[in-house]
Amino acid sequence: MQHTQKNFIALLKAISYKLKAERGFTLIETIFYISIITVVTGVLLITVLNNLTAYNKSESRQNMFANANDALETIIRDTKYAKSIYTPTSIFDNDAGQLSLETAIGAPTGEITTFVDFYLDNGVVYQKKEGEVALALTSERVVITKLRFSDMTSGTRHSITAEISGRINTDAEGGSGNTATINLASSAALRGAY
Image (cartoon, rainbow, N blue to C red; front, top):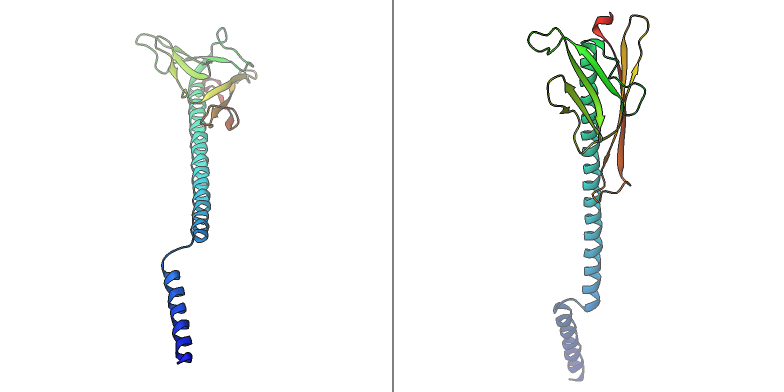
């Protein structure tokens, strides 16, 4: 009987231990699991935020390149089709340059030629056609820091080199730590110079 009693007590202890284990998590287990979940969530959050920041920077750089490139292409296209360079109002070899062109394209009715100017004002590149309001060629989000024109005239061959430098702030707080910059240059010979 004593042997049966010992077996019964051992069985009760085993059942009691099993019941305690099935009741739930211990405090240490709960803290451990919460710590693991917190670390994994933190790593995922940091990864997502870094990816969003990189995406925004990439989009800003693409926007800046598109703005500066479109402005440069407009300047070069108009230069190619220009009849001559109007030197009294053109400013060469200066970071805030101005290019004035005489062109037959878009001339008012009754006129043979008209004038078009390209200039930099408060970080924006403008195209000003005679008798029209100036047209911004770059976005306000892009700050153009240099618009330089060089007169590469050689004898009777007239050509212009245009350089554009700009920046855009990709930092959400408006700081200068994450600033993307761009430098573009292109040349064109005036059509009348061929």
